[in-house]
Amino acid sequence: MAGKDYYKILGVKKDAGEAEIKTAYRRLARKHHPDVNPGDKTAEARFKEINEAYEVLSDAEKRRKYDQYGDQWQHADQFAKAGGQGTPFGDFNAGGAQTFHFEGSNIDIDSIFGDLFQGYGGGTGRRARSRRGQNVEYPIDVSLEEAFTGANRVITLEVEEPCPACGGSGRIQNAICSVCRGLGTTRRLKQIEVKIPAGVTDGSRIRISGQGAVGYGGGPSGDLYLVTSVKTNPLFERKGDDLQVVVPVPLTVAVLGGETEIPTLKGKIALKIPAETQNGRVFRLSGQGMPRLGSSSRGDLLASIKIVLPSNLSKEEKKLFEQLRQLRPTG
Image 1 (spheres, one colour):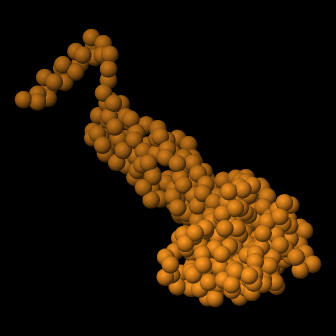
Image 2 (image 1 turned 135 degrees about the horizontal axis):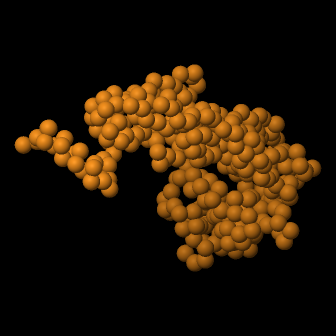
Image 3 (image 1 turned 135 degrees about the vertical axis):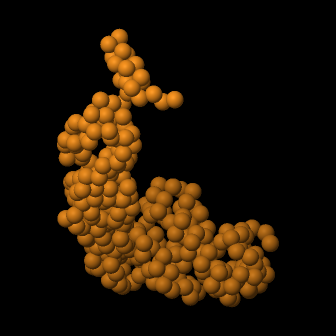
């Protein structure tokens, strides 16, 4: 077969069925559509080639002629009578608009492109069908302090909005809208202020109503979901709603008892250390941990004691430790 190999263009075998050809076309057309690849001439050329292949292989009679005569299938009838030329999805002219030809084509453009580009909030059907916009997820990093207190953030999103030229219909006077190319939507950057509630964890999903993709055909917009990732903290380790912290305590305080300061995310608090506190002992401070998401209760703070041995001892201090060793022999 000389010339273009339509089966190869769609990535299907010669014996592929109608459903397989349609699936391959939809996948490739969505990938190479000019609105998905703005300014990419290679993608635009590939998109036209894919349409050409599908226009032939989706029609049983054209496919039969193509299988026999290759890309000269139009001249199958004694190579004299020209068949329907032009792809059912049109050609791109110099101005970027599209002209559509339907001679001899049995393809339902509503069923193909109406479903194909629903993820982009638009379609090229003859009549707009109302459809709710898609939900959008937005990853956001949160510090442990922000997760503890809650926070307000201003984020920048690329949002879809109804095309101002066609009002979201995708058409102007029964012609494809040249501004949105039939999708019915345009994109712009938008800043919105969002509130991060106290108690969020890794993977928490915060719903912002109506801030997702714009609806199609007058349908409501989808929602925005902030997906949080809580950063690690050099001082505190989070275990669920509890916090763990290591508290250095001088040897003298651990032996004789006393007070030491413990850091919390609300500030320092005093902790009474009983005499003869052993290294590694954990004190549980109720309600000093993380807020529980959607609740007024809190986790606990677990303070682990780390006894700090004295250094740079004076002669007098060494003498005292020597006396202690004699009083409490280890042998």
